[in-house]
Image 1 (cartoon, rainbow, N blue to C red):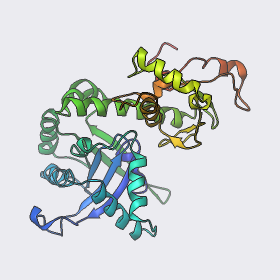
Image 2: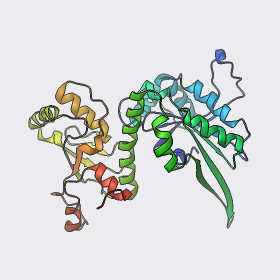
Image 3: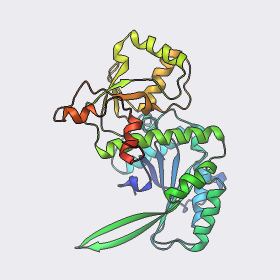
Image 4: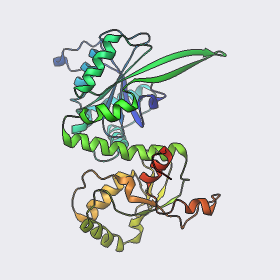
Length: 328
């Protein structure tokens, strides 16, 4: 799991493993260790419980207990845990560097509200019906629990592992559970929008659709009224480089802003531009909708006619095309 955190979901950063530094007042003996703790790009913690064989009938209770404990963690607690974890793996980082790594991994502002709603992942060779039935009910009661089945094979002397998400299936997750997963409406909206934004980046990077150095142009859309768009246009007129960025195939920060040469996520940069131009804090922007492919600059080795077909398309639309959810 540590070497291949993508099994746990898109863009999961492993914070620590075999964590047992619980406060005494929690009443958890030191021998109880959280197998893996991760952070996904939406800003949620990921609590992972691993079982080598068939999961025992109480495995979900362990995951819930750990989720309850880590839901009290703050940025400093997580940074300290990450520092000790990477130190044990031969990497020396200062606490501030660990803190910044966590902040950089999240697409958007750090949200204590989302930290309080950890996602739980249980991985085992098989699950008894007591567990699957209970997890279905707990999911309907707003707890976010994934069951992943692992299979092992030895092929020509090599050990291969295959992972299958048993629950929730994509159909169940989208149409049944997603509306009830998070109790607070504001947190649910923020999480859903961050997932859409992050998924668009992952789809484009994984498909290799945009070469490094692709030119992008700013066009404020989602989350911006016409008055706000006018304010952003006026702000951009003072420095034309503020409307330009180049694409880099790194999921965390794929945009290099021409105005300062620094890397940003699409949503992070849209939020920064919004605040800089208006003096107001943005709320719930889908950043990938703000960035269009600038087809006047054709990357080297790309057919100009094929490249022209991307004209006027923003990052969200490109991801939809790749996912087959658009007529194009």
